[in-house]
Image 1 (cartoon, rainbow, N blue to C red):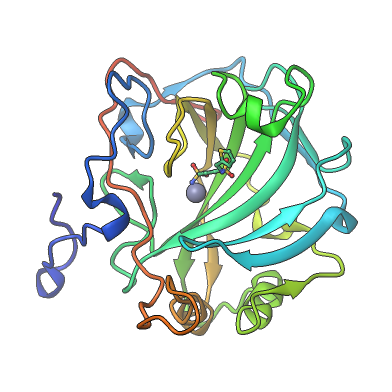
Image 2 (tube, rainbow, N blue to C red; image 1 turned 180 degrees about the vertical axis):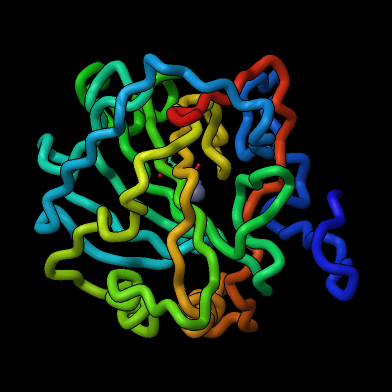
Length: 261
Ligand SMILES: NS(=O)(=O)c1ccc(S(=O)(=O)NCc2cccs2)s1
Ligand SMILES: [Zn+2]
């Protein structure tokens, strides 16, 4: 396992129970997450800007699924979609969720030049143009598109949009009225993109990853609220929901492209 961080935090990265079993896809050639080596990424001038149009009223509810908390959207029509970027079709927003660490030294799934961020947001979309259901899209190479956004802690920057989610966490089984997740995506258009996989079971190699170069900034209390969630259900011995990120996977025969020079 990588050892990273300032000398006083030379802990070994936790291997979370979720990942202790050899959770690799036999013969997997495009697994996620990966380390993005900035200088090895290749600028592709043909990459288009990513166009994001979300309808906040498609927001359904927030819930704890045992490895993260996720906010689900009504994906029965093309109301919250992304198009452009590296994508051939438009993709429908299905849900978003986060991965985070027990401390700010780690928590993201992807790393940039071997640097972890304290957390990473994933907005999961599926190709409803080509596939009839999300479950079928999950099994196909061009079935999913996930936007990854890094979270950085800056005690002076309280993130208004994130606070709406944080306020709902204590209840977690929480009905939302409206929430527009584009408020969680940095306005800077720059991104990296590569062909990868889901980072939790079924780990299918069906994801076009779009990783935003700029992180969003949140404050410590907001991240602490994530760490108050539990992996365990009522009545079980409490296990804090932290370190729910998959170990880095080999790049193998892949190139990471950048939309910026
Ligand atoms: N961390 S990540 O963004 O790579 C994701 C992991 C799992 C995701 S899912 O929403 O597609 N659920 C998986 C499935 C549900 C039903 C059939 S497969 S997204
Ligand atoms: Zn994820």
